[in-house]
Length: 187
Image (cartoon, rainbow, N blue to C red):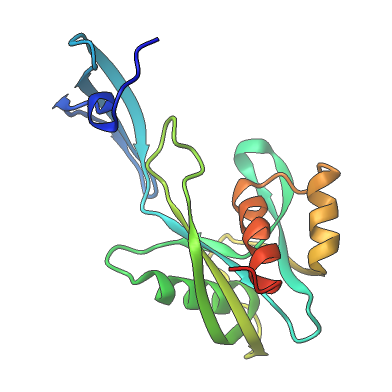
């Protein structure tokens, strides 16, 4: 098998087409040039990006949300998260989402990394933040039509639920990987 450099693997765009645009998603179909000179079609979703917050309470437990997710028709256990508004700084998004979804503010924020949850069909990125020194500022201020329940779990309990197949949300699993390292002082 031939070894390709990153440059040789690139697929230059030949044409772009917007198929559909909604409030959140923008579906595209582009024609690209393949490394061997042939052409192919690439369909993908343009997404504004999001943040996920590892919110650490004073007792060391983490804030989770139980929320119904329509595409899979079930309730998921996940970390607080939300989409980045156009032109919004990612830390501002994290602060806003934590307050809106949980009613908490954090004294300390640390950006840990980024994940790309669906690289085969979307350009979505999720910025991962660690929030510590939480102070409750009142009730959550959920978006219209948004319903969730807050739950506290220790990091150990959360990881056990991942291993038991009870937490399957990719952003939460990735953030917990970072949480294990960050809270142990390894990153």
